[in-house]
Amino acid sequence: MPKNFYITTPIFYPNDKLHLGHAYTMIVADVIARYKRSQGYKIYFQTGSDDHGEKIAKKAKSLAITPQELVDKHVLLFQKLWKELGISNHIFYRTSFLIHKEKTQKVFTKLLEKGDIYLGNYKGNYCITCEDYIKESKINNNYCPFCHSELRLIEERAYFLRVSKYYPNLMNYYEKNPDFILPLNIKKELSENFLKNDIRDLCITRRDVKWGVQVPNNQELVIYVWFEALLNYLTSEIGERNFFSTENNCEIIQIVGKDIARFHGIYWPIILMLLEAKLPNKILSHGWILSEGGKMSKSKGNVVDPLELLKIYPQNLLRAYFIGKINFLQDGILEEELLKSFYQDFFVNNLSNLVSRVNKMVILYNNGIIPEFDEKINNEKLKDYYYKCCLIVKFFQEHMNKYELTKAFSQIQALLVLTNKLIQDLSPWELAKKRDNLLLNSTLNHSCNGIKIIAFLLNCIIPDTSKKILEVFNVKLEELNWNTLFDFSFLDGVKVKLLKNHLYEPIK
Ligand code: MSP
Image 1 (cartoon, helix red, strand yellow):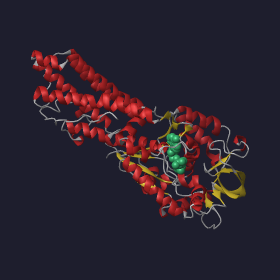
Image 2: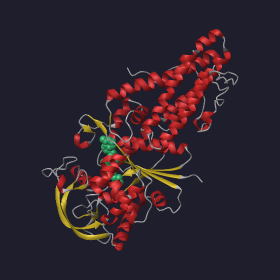
Image 3: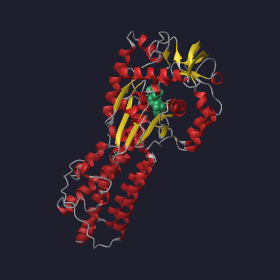
Image 4: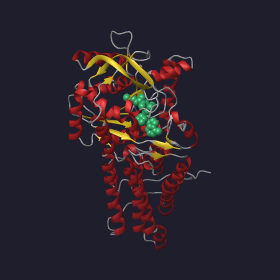
């Protein structure tokens, strides 16, 4: 039976359009999902919308529409964006679904009965933009230290989640599973700054908010939006099945941005422990997409609308840039000029040129038929190239298995360079002049097979480009797998298509 792979993204706030930072989270998750799919896993890929909370209610009020109308409108835009970004098959789950509300209430009741939720008094400051309670020591003149919005003092009877009870267990878990949260600096920060200092229980209800899931048997209180939102990962049918599965055949990977690593690295595992559920295998906390003024965010007003960008640049460019140019798990910059030069460099100068070059040579020197490799040839350069191709496939997988996406991408770039070098070194045009057909054919064979590998490895990152390349060589993606990559007789006798234009032309 194939192993299950459950991958989640945070659920996005539908109070507005999404920006490039959000698109980044989603693309990263999609690349991992596609890779694991190619490895034979059964993929459950869940994303969705975080429909409730004060922020949404406030925005809807300012527009004189209902919160439901507001979120429904934005969710349509999310889905349009995922389509345009080429996000593969996924579950789009919403916290305004009835099933989520019912199951969230059940969780609340269960924890209340167990004594892990209790009634107390809350006094503190709340940031609506972050939907978070802000610690006294961090507050600067009544403003949020993270987004600089004005804070609101809240003083009310409220329910608390007894997280303090499980802090030692979580510490213990961190120690036993050193790479539970990646990167390590985020884990370190969580354990030093929060786990060791902050052992307060979490306030999980709100009195003055109406747009949310009601506390069972209580007309006055709604469940705190973060507590409710985290539960989305296990109130969906797939989530419940995977988090409560008794068999050990499911890997759970959760992607989050570092701004929300605390919720996912501390509260979330504790909630799971309280519910006696499994813990995710890994939480990957990625960095921020920065643009002028720092982290791209609505409150800073420096956001780029991905739907606008996609009107000018192809989906693949954005995907490849995010994976290849932004060191995974670290912050990275996206500016139009950088995007353009990456396009010219990677898509035009490297990828497209190589494909055209090899395509042309196969047509010119062998009537468009991909020739066989002649075993009798004992050419060091070809041997070395084959050996390196095998290594690159191996390294690519090793990196991907460790979620080192940018390092995996650089293996593809290395193969592009190697293939170009092979052609340069063996100079098929000279071989043709000398009528050294054996070596000429073997060189063409290896170049085509190298491109086949490049296209296959690119598939999880830029599937459209990968398909486009394979079409030139008349191969269907489904015909390839991780083993056929090593078989350099795979393309023997295949007739290539005449490529009239380059796959990617320079931007004017
Ligand atoms: N609704 C919560 C998540 C609840 S999950 C149970 C939330 N939503 S969000 O819409 O604000 O953010 C969703 C994701 O986008 C988060 O992972 C966040 O880190 C990511 N990003 C938002 N701005 C970003 C950048 N500028 N750069 C990279 N990712 C960023 O938080």
